[in-house]
Each structure stands twice: as structure tokens, then as C-alpha cells.
Length: 258
Length: 204
Length: 90
Image 1 (cartoon, helix red, strand yellow):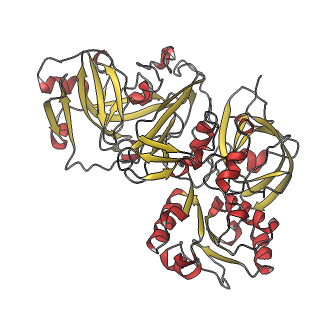
Image 2: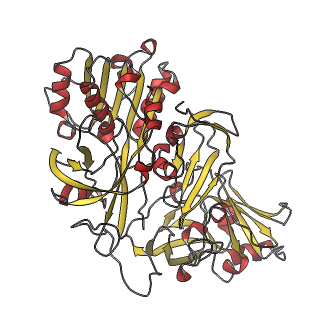
Image 3: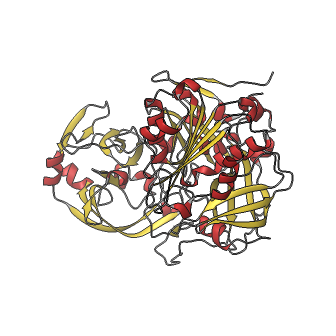
């Protein structure tokens, strides 16, 4: 079954309604990002790459709504979101700061059938992430780990500095135990003296060096802030990848949901 | 069913609560950028602003230097977006609709206009909502030339109506004999959009 | 009461359109009435998701889908779409 067919098979009514989500666990990922493990009764399931809408209501009735990519694999019973705190924001300081286990909010989804990947759809799988754009791609890698790791995959992650890298330990562990998964980091603002990864913004040379070649016909997913995605997608097509094999998900200009 | 309250969540922006804020609005310190398309980047060298008659035929045109030569007004106004934010005390400089019409020196062909903009956006306005100092073509915001993402080189500014009427990247006004809906109005927003009467949607 | 959504992607408009259609909206293919480019709806350039959804052709930027949902009434301007194709389960 292709991703499109699988997504189309999901019951549509489940995506419309707002459901109650309860935080069961909070995980500090980086100094500015937290993951929330959620219990969502009667969650209909999701595909890696999809997102949810989150709605918060204050006591005076004021509401704010944002979208967050699902970080967890579809195989996990509990839903996980990873939220990067944007200081000037309104929702992310709450979710990545104030919120604690037991707190509840409304959630709707899963949403999105275009930016999804299942192991059954095959590969090779090329993932390109900018900052918090790694979240939906991590769901894909976590799903791939559940599905047997047969699909060759490469991940190129761009982060500001080493402390901003999301899921760093888990990524290293996934790559260390899997000869079909390769992981390359690039740091754009500062790198430690003993850094062995790349040290600049993602560009055509970096993609040519580390990504699957067009001849491999990879399924490519690029996610992150809009300027990042546009630059990477343009570079990939310039290297010869077919545009229809490059799927993109662009966050707003600030790089995340404020 | 009332929505669930999330413990500890509160709005970021403070509500001034004074008479300055129309019903249903909250005050923000930001200036959010909302756009129905990519930011046009028209150079002032090629910019023009035209008035068109009922048949769409141009009867007056200003190039950029012509616009700057017209008498300018500076105003400080509150602006109200239909998405509920209000920004107090915004400073603008531009040419009033009255000054444009005086410069054109012709009787107005219609009671309403459709504003046309780079990028294809349109919005409709009654002449009554533009004349008497109510509307201007603004080219400076907060003391600096209007930035492209905020509608530069020039935008319409009609602050007594919801801000979607203050069309960014405006390039001309086509007169109409009767009111007709522009882009958002045709999709269900109110024809006129008076925030003090909370005229957000068709039928309000 | 909904705050401005900062996403600028056809995938984000899915939450808006998903409630209306029974099929998976972001995977549906639409043909631009201007330049005839085929794109999945999820790949369209999305704008102004606060007042409504405006989805433009990534090739020529023409407005393909403009829509609002106000007081429970959906309005969709689909003049920019020449054709819509969706893979159904059969």
C-alpha cells in the first residue's frame, strides 16, 4: 500500500474533531526544546510525517492554535510532539516551558498526506532537516527502526550549534547500529574545536557529498524554516533530482511555531 | 460544548481595555505580516498609480516622483485586523485620497472603487470611506520608507475600517457605479468592514 | 479567536480543507489553470492562513484555491484549478 493509499484509508471523521490530549511526560531535549508525551484517547493512528493542530484556551476564553509535527513513530501507542521554544512566541513558551504532566489541551489530526513516508513505500530515503524541521523526519526514522531498517536512509541535519541538535543521542545510537543509515550534521553558527562534521549552511556541494545521488532515485523529504527548505530543494533539483521526488514542509519565517 | 481550558495558558498580548479598542480585538505590540501571496518587489522607477473609469480606462496617472510631489499628510492611527489584533499609535505618511482627487481635477465617475494591487489582490471601498481625510496612499511607516512586506512602495491606508481594506502594493483605483466585492469580500468577509460595528463577515 | 498560523505550506491548509473533503486533501493532484503544472495540494504555496487559505501554483504563482470558513460556511474559489485528481482506494 502506498502512503497515499494508506492515508486515504484512515477514517476522515477522526481528523476533524478536537480531542483531549493529556501530557503524561515531559522530556527536555535541548535548552530550548522539550518533547511532550501525550495520552490521546481513541487516537486514530498516524503516518510518519503528519502533524496535528494544537489549541490552547485560556481562562478568559482566549484561544491560540498552532500546528506541530508528530515526532513519534506510528507504532508507538503514545503520541509525542517536540516543541522548540520561541521566546517572542505565545504557544511555544507554554508548551515548551510552563506545561507539565497532567496538563491538558485540545488536539486535532493527524493532518497531511503529502509529506508522509512508510517503510512499505521503499527508498532509498533521503532526509534533510533544518533546526526543528527534524521532527517529522525523526518520526520517519523511528518508524523505519520499527519496520526493520531495510530501507537505506541518509539524514543531513543543520543546527545552529551543538547544544541545539535535537535527538542527538538517539540519532547517534540509530546510526551506530545500522550500516544502512548514515548521519551527517552541519553546524551553522558555532562548532566545538574537535567537531568532525560540516560547518556551514547546507548547500549544493554538501548535498552532492552526502546525499544519495539522483541515479539512486531517493525519496527526499526536506523540512525546516522556509528559506532553508527553498535553498535545499533548489539545490537538490539543481543536482539532478527529479522535482516530484523532493517533498518539502516549510515552517513559517521564524523557523517554528511561535 | 465549551472548549477545555489549559491550565496556566494566557494570552501574550495585553488588552488595554480602553475605549480605543473595537469590540473583539486585543492589543498587540507586534506588526504581524499577513499576505495572500509572495511579496511583490516593484521598483519605484517603474511604479505608477492610476485612476480608471467605469470601463477600466485610465484617466489619470502618477509616477513615483509625481506622488512624492503631492501634498503629504502625516497621521498617527490605530489599526484593526479582522483576525482580532489591534495595533495602537501607528505612524504613517502619504498622500490623502482628497489630494489625489484634487490633483486629478475631474469629477469622480462613480460612488465606489475597486483597488487593484501588484500580486492581484483587490478590495472594494465606498468613496465616502476614502474622502474627507479617511483614506490615503501611504509610502512611509514609522518614519521610514514603507517596506515591501508591509506593502511598499505604497499601500492604501483606510484605518477606520478593518485592515484588509488597507490594500498593500496598491497600483490603482477603478471607479464603480455600485459596490461590488473584492477578493476577501467575495469569500465571505463584510463588504464594508467597520470594526466599531464589528462588521467582520457578510451578514454582520 | 484563532491566532495567525505561521506555516506557509499547502500541508497547513490541509487542516482547513481536510474537514471539508472525505479524501486525503494534501495528496490530491491539481492542474493549474494558468500554466497547466500538476502539483499535489500539499506542494502548493500557502498564504494568509489567518483570514483564509490562499494556495498558489508553485510554478506561476497564480491563485489556484482561495477559501474561507466563516461562521461554519465554507466558500472555495477554485477557478485556478483546471482539474483535480485523487487516487481512491478501490
